[in-house]
Amino acid sequence: MKDKVLLHNIRYFATEQEKLLHEERLSRGMGHASPYSTLLAAMGNHWKPGCFEAVKRMAERTWQEGYQVCFYEETDRCLNPYDAIGVMRNCAYMKALREGWEYILYVDNDVLPEPDTLVKLLKNPVAIQSPIVAYADGQDHGLKMPALEKGGGLVLVTSCVVSFLLVRTNVFFPWALGGFWQDGIGADEDYQFQKFYQAGHLPFVDTNVTVTCVEPPHFPLDERKD
Image (cartoon, rainbow, N blue to C red; front, side, top):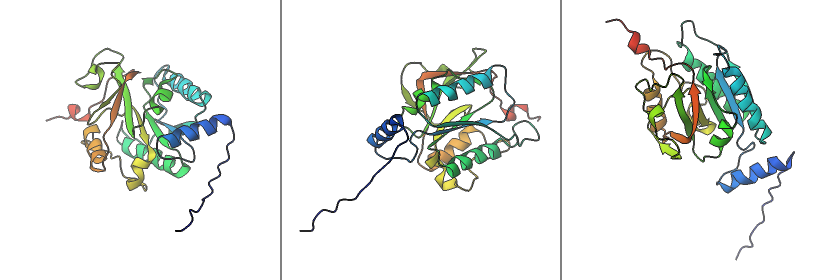
Protein backbone atom coordinates (compact mmCIF):
# COMPACT_ATOMS: atom_id res chain seq x y z
CA MET A 1 0.00 0.00 0.00
CA LYS A 2 1.39 3.35 -1.03
CA ASP A 3 2.27 5.71 1.81
CA LYS A 4 0.19 8.86 2.05
CA VAL A 5 2.11 11.90 0.84
CA LEU A 6 1.97 15.04 2.96
CA LEU A 7 1.50 18.12 0.79
CA HIS A 8 2.66 21.33 2.41
CA ASN A 9 0.43 24.39 2.23
CA ILE A 10 1.93 27.25 4.21
CA ARG A 11 0.12 30.59 4.17
CA TYR A 12 1.50 33.79 5.70
CA PHE A 13 -0.72 36.65 6.87
CA ALA A 14 -0.12 40.33 7.50
CA THR A 15 -2.57 40.51 10.41
CA GLU A 16 -4.48 38.17 12.70
CA GLN A 17 -7.76 39.47 11.27
CA GLU A 18 -6.61 38.53 7.77
CA LYS A 19 -5.89 35.01 9.05
CA LEU A 20 -9.33 34.75 10.67
CA LEU A 21 -11.10 35.84 7.48
CA HIS A 22 -9.07 33.31 5.49
CA GLU A 23 -10.04 30.49 7.86
CA GLU A 24 -13.70 31.55 7.83
CA ARG A 25 -13.68 31.54 4.03
CA LEU A 26 -12.12 28.05 3.98
CA SER A 27 -14.87 26.83 6.30
CA ARG A 28 -17.36 27.68 3.55
CA GLY A 29 -15.64 25.28 1.17
CA MET A 30 -13.15 27.17 -0.98
CA GLY A 31 -10.34 29.59 -0.25
CA HIS A 32 -9.39 32.82 -1.92
CA ALA A 33 -6.17 34.85 -2.01
CA SER A 34 -8.09 37.80 -0.57
CA PRO A 35 -11.30 36.44 0.98
CA TYR A 36 -14.30 38.77 0.95
CA SER A 37 -12.27 41.51 -0.75
CA THR A 38 -14.62 43.86 -2.61
CA LEU A 39 -14.18 46.32 -5.44
CA LEU A 40 -16.87 48.91 -4.84
CA ALA A 41 -17.65 50.33 -8.27
CA ALA A 42 -19.69 53.52 -8.55
CA MET A 43 -21.25 54.01 -11.95
CA GLY A 44 -20.06 57.54 -12.66
CA ASN A 45 -19.60 60.52 -10.36
CA HIS A 46 -22.92 62.35 -10.65
CA TRP A 47 -23.79 61.93 -7.00
CA LYS A 48 -27.08 63.00 -5.48
CA PRO A 49 -26.79 64.97 -2.21
CA GLY A 50 -25.39 62.85 0.60
CA CYS A 51 -24.94 59.70 -1.48
CA PHE A 52 -21.17 59.89 -2.01
CA GLU A 53 -20.64 60.45 1.71
CA ALA A 54 -22.92 57.51 2.59
CA VAL A 55 -21.15 55.10 0.24
CA LYS A 56 -17.73 56.28 1.46
CA ARG A 57 -18.77 55.72 5.09
CA MET A 58 -19.86 52.21 4.16
CA ALA A 59 -16.50 51.51 2.48
CA GLU A 60 -14.65 52.82 5.53
CA ARG A 61 -16.76 50.72 7.92
CA THR A 62 -16.07 47.62 5.81
CA TRP A 63 -12.32 48.29 5.99
CA GLN A 64 -12.54 48.86 9.75
CA GLU A 65 -14.09 45.39 10.05
CA GLY A 66 -10.96 43.93 8.46
CA TYR A 67 -12.11 43.45 4.86
CA GLN A 68 -10.07 44.67 1.91
CA VAL A 69 -12.09 47.20 -0.06
CA CYS A 70 -11.54 49.72 -2.83
CA PHE A 71 -14.09 52.41 -3.64
CA TYR A 72 -13.73 54.01 -7.06
CA GLU A 73 -15.78 55.85 -9.68
CA GLU A 74 -16.03 54.32 -13.13
CA THR A 75 -15.58 56.80 -15.98
CA ASP A 76 -18.87 58.09 -17.36
CA ARG A 77 -18.88 56.88 -20.96
CA CYS A 78 -22.44 57.99 -21.75
CA LEU A 79 -23.23 60.51 -24.48
CA ASN A 80 -26.89 60.51 -23.52
CA PRO A 81 -28.17 59.37 -20.11
CA TYR A 82 -27.56 55.62 -19.54
CA ASP A 83 -26.62 54.86 -23.17
CA ALA A 84 -23.23 53.34 -22.21
CA ILE A 85 -24.03 52.01 -18.75
CA GLY A 86 -23.40 48.46 -19.95
CA VAL A 87 -19.89 49.33 -21.08
CA MET A 88 -19.25 50.97 -17.70
CA ARG A 89 -20.41 47.87 -15.82
CA ASN A 90 -18.27 45.67 -18.07
CA CYS A 91 -15.19 47.81 -17.40
CA ALA A 92 -15.83 47.50 -13.66
CA TYR A 93 -15.99 43.70 -13.51
CA MET A 94 -12.99 43.35 -15.85
CA LYS A 95 -11.07 45.54 -13.42
CA ALA A 96 -12.26 43.37 -10.51
CA LEU A 97 -11.14 40.17 -12.25
CA ARG A 98 -7.82 41.66 -13.35
CA GLU A 99 -6.97 42.92 -9.87
CA GLY A 100 -8.06 39.75 -8.06
CA TRP A 101 -11.06 40.98 -6.01
CA GLU A 102 -13.43 38.28 -4.81
CA TYR A 103 -16.53 40.48 -5.08
CA ILE A 104 -17.68 43.50 -7.01
CA LEU A 105 -20.33 45.81 -5.57
CA TYR A 106 -22.12 47.94 -8.16
CA VAL A 107 -23.56 51.17 -6.74
CA ASP A 108 -25.45 53.89 -8.54
CA ASN A 109 -24.94 57.54 -7.66
CA ASP A 110 -28.31 57.88 -5.92
CA VAL A 111 -28.13 55.28 -3.11
CA LEU A 112 -27.92 55.90 0.64
CA PRO A 113 -26.62 52.72 2.31
CA GLU A 114 -26.10 52.36 6.04
CA PRO A 115 -22.43 52.00 7.09
CA ASP A 116 -22.71 48.25 7.84
CA THR A 117 -24.62 47.29 4.69
CA LEU A 118 -21.74 45.67 2.81
CA VAL A 119 -20.46 43.85 5.91
CA LYS A 120 -23.91 42.30 6.36
CA LEU A 121 -24.14 41.18 2.73
CA LEU A 122 -20.67 39.63 2.73
CA LYS A 123 -21.82 37.21 5.42
CA ASN A 124 -24.27 35.61 2.97
CA PRO A 125 -22.85 32.60 1.07
CA VAL A 126 -24.45 33.45 -2.28
CA ALA A 127 -22.95 34.61 -5.57
CA ILE A 128 -25.40 37.38 -6.55
CA GLN A 129 -27.37 39.45 -4.09
CA SER A 130 -29.00 42.76 -3.36
CA PRO A 131 -30.57 44.35 -0.32
CA ILE A 132 -34.14 45.55 -0.57
CA VAL A 133 -33.87 48.74 -2.61
CA ALA A 134 -36.61 51.11 -1.43
CA TYR A 135 -37.31 54.49 -2.99
CA ALA A 136 -37.23 57.69 -1.00
CA ASP A 137 -40.70 58.72 -2.21
CA GLY A 138 -42.21 55.59 -0.65
CA GLN A 139 -43.55 54.29 -3.98
CA ASP A 140 -42.73 50.90 -5.52
CA HIS A 141 -42.85 52.20 -9.13
CA GLY A 142 -44.29 48.92 -10.36
CA LEU A 143 -41.42 46.85 -8.91
CA LYS A 144 -41.81 43.91 -6.53
CA MET A 145 -38.61 44.47 -4.55
CA PRO A 146 -39.71 47.50 -2.46
CA ALA A 147 -42.79 45.53 -1.36
CA LEU A 148 -40.87 42.45 -0.16
CA GLU A 149 -41.58 41.57 3.46
CA LYS A 150 -38.66 42.67 5.60
CA GLY A 151 -36.87 40.45 8.08
CA GLY A 152 -37.22 37.20 6.15
CA GLY A 153 -33.56 36.62 5.37
CA LEU A 154 -32.44 35.61 1.90
CA VAL A 155 -35.15 35.34 -0.76
CA LEU A 156 -34.47 33.79 -4.16
CA VAL A 157 -35.69 35.96 -7.05
CA THR A 158 -35.44 35.85 -10.82
CA SER A 159 -34.17 39.42 -11.23
CA CYS A 160 -33.70 42.61 -9.26
CA VAL A 161 -32.67 46.20 -9.75
CA VAL A 162 -28.92 46.75 -10.10
CA SER A 163 -28.72 50.02 -8.16
CA PHE A 164 -26.89 48.16 -5.38
CA LEU A 165 -25.72 44.72 -6.52
CA LEU A 166 -23.04 42.48 -4.98
CA VAL A 167 -21.62 39.80 -7.29
CA ARG A 168 -18.87 37.26 -6.73
CA THR A 169 -16.43 38.00 -9.54
CA ASN A 170 -16.01 34.38 -10.65
CA VAL A 171 -19.58 34.59 -11.98
CA PHE A 172 -18.12 36.73 -14.79
CA PHE A 173 -15.38 34.24 -15.79
CA PRO A 174 -17.28 33.19 -18.98
CA TRP A 175 -17.21 36.88 -19.99
CA ALA A 176 -13.70 37.67 -18.72
CA LEU A 177 -12.94 39.77 -21.81
CA GLY A 178 -16.09 41.85 -21.38
CA GLY A 179 -19.51 41.75 -22.97
CA PHE A 180 -21.82 40.57 -20.20
CA TRP A 181 -23.71 43.81 -19.64
CA GLN A 182 -25.25 45.42 -22.71
CA ASP A 183 -26.27 48.93 -23.63
CA GLY A 184 -29.26 50.15 -25.50
CA ILE A 185 -33.01 50.12 -25.14
CA GLY A 186 -34.32 46.65 -24.37
CA ALA A 187 -31.26 45.39 -22.47
CA ASP A 188 -33.04 45.79 -19.15
CA GLU A 189 -32.51 43.97 -15.84
CA ASP A 190 -34.74 41.05 -16.86
CA TYR A 191 -32.61 40.42 -19.95
CA GLN A 192 -29.34 40.63 -18.02
CA PHE A 193 -30.56 38.24 -15.33
CA GLN A 194 -31.69 35.78 -18.00
CA LYS A 195 -28.02 35.69 -19.02
CA PHE A 196 -27.03 34.98 -15.40
CA TYR A 197 -29.62 32.18 -15.31
CA GLN A 198 -28.29 30.65 -18.53
CA ALA A 199 -24.93 30.39 -16.75
CA GLY A 200 -26.53 28.75 -13.71
CA HIS A 201 -26.99 31.71 -11.38
CA LEU A 202 -30.04 33.28 -9.78
CA PRO A 203 -29.96 36.35 -7.53
CA PHE A 204 -31.04 36.65 -3.91
CA VAL A 205 -32.45 39.60 -1.98
CA ASP A 206 -31.43 39.95 1.66
CA THR A 207 -34.68 41.15 3.19
CA ASN A 208 -32.89 41.93 6.46
CA VAL A 209 -31.05 44.79 4.74
CA THR A 210 -32.58 47.87 3.09
CA VAL A 211 -30.91 50.58 1.02
CA THR A 212 -32.71 53.79 0.13
CA CYS A 213 -32.56 55.00 -3.46
CA VAL A 214 -33.06 58.76 -3.79
CA GLU A 215 -34.40 58.75 -7.35
CA PRO A 216 -37.14 56.59 -8.87
CA PRO A 217 -36.13 53.91 -11.42
CA HIS A 218 -35.60 54.86 -15.05
CA PHE A 219 -37.47 52.92 -17.76
CA PRO A 220 -36.31 54.10 -21.22
CA LEU A 221 -39.09 52.24 -23.06
CA ASP A 222 -41.69 54.28 -21.21
CA GLU A 223 -40.39 57.35 -23.03
CA ARG A 224 -40.79 56.05 -26.57
CA LYS A 225 -43.12 57.86 -28.92
CA ASP A 226 -45.55 55.76 -30.95
